[in-house]
Amino acid sequence: MHGRWRESLRTKVGDLSVYRFRILLFFLILTLIIIPLAVVYPEFNPLFLIFFSMVIISGVFAAQRKRHFLILILLLAIPAVAARWISYLFPTAVSEITVHLFALLFFSFFAVYLLEIVLRAKTITGDTIAGAISVYLIMGLTWALAYQFMDEIQPGSFAYDTGTGPGGVLSLMDYVYFSFVTITTLGYGDIYPLSPVAESAASFEAVTGTIYIAVLIARLVGSMEW
Image (tube, rainbow, N blue to C red):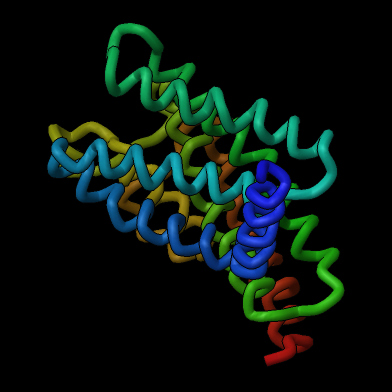
């Protein structure tokens, strides 16, 4: 009985693994959509936490490989999810810096790890393309978390218009906005780095984003099997 249940579960997981990057991309898009709503309307915060957690969970599922890799990803994923929820439910229990640090560690490792999986794909399929797009979105989200962490460690790392963010203070949405404006090299100028570390990080993000789009996406689309 237990053997059949395990075999059935493995079959279902195997069927879902064909769409693992699509599932990850789906929750990434939902998370990016809900972030501005959660900033403006605090009642959306639980929904943001759910989607954020699902990004991490679907990321772990997408990265399924050898056991020691899975264990390492889980060791990064569990604190990232737990710290975010504990901070929401018990605001004084965990500092914001700790919450952002755990998330930053997970997404930094996961972005590189997912990129390696996509690059090593023997057959380029629609799901591989979804993985490549996911890498790009995760890069933007990771840099946003990095900027937020920098600004908390060294306040004043960024300059911005006084109307930016609720109460004139930068929110997660502002960092996400600045990150994607930087990675796409748009550079509107309403938010800009001041500290040397922030300036270096923004420059590096712009370079990596340009290289990624020019080289990786072009290669994947050119060799895709539709």
